[in-house]
Length: 334
Image (cartoon, rainbow, N blue to C red; front, side, top):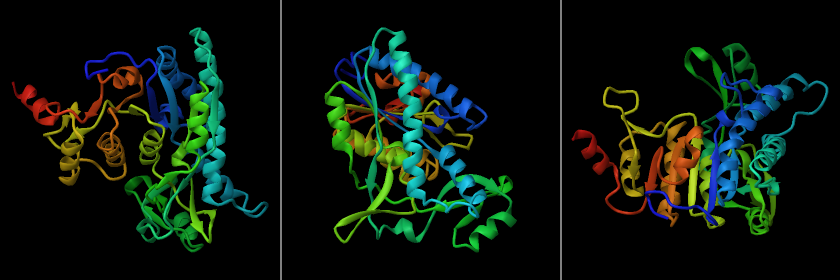
């Protein structure tokens, strides 16, 4: 398969679904809205599976974890609050079941029935990761300053986000290993479509020869590229709510980034083109995947998922020379 497309039959493709695939367009995370959003998101996934791709899915879980944190707060006087890694594990299972049901229906409608399975996944992180000393990953909803400061008095870290209010921030340590990738591989080999490492996986550290959960959130896109490499995927697609990455975002010189290479992405990231909390991790994930031997990675809208997997939409990253932003810019200038 080359950059002009070709078949994905038999190829392993990992798809990382963003939060827009889990909630309504207005961000609503009510059960019916989540179910409807996931139902719609599974249509392009089912098309890829029906075409012969061997698909693994990961997904975001921000709104779902946010809801659990609200329940923690409201019910603290009745039942003990659960730690953040528990919230991650619970939402992996909840979203996984919704994906399983929706994708099985979509595949049956295409005459391409496959078993779909979810692996509740743990992700190993380093207890000494600097992220624990400088929490920066926003989670949950926005709150007025007064409520945020009450939570800060209980030991939580909160930061202001302009007019929208304050949000809790937690550590987002580097993912080192997807501990349950072996189970995902066995299911994939057995013909299943696999859902794994949802929300980046439940973070754990090694302590005294055993594993224990930690209060943190692993970036789902960085975890996705790690899982893709572990499973031998040829293609990684990060499906989001924009058409792709841009250079000069927010400036008059903003331009869509169509085709690029890992080296050029590294240069652009070092020059500050990608926001650290949004596009930055996605760009780093696709860069790492291709730099580590993956054939292709793409950042694209969910609607263009199939085209992105074939290298025909979004920001496409390949190791081959001559397909970088320099050639794209030259074409635009002509």
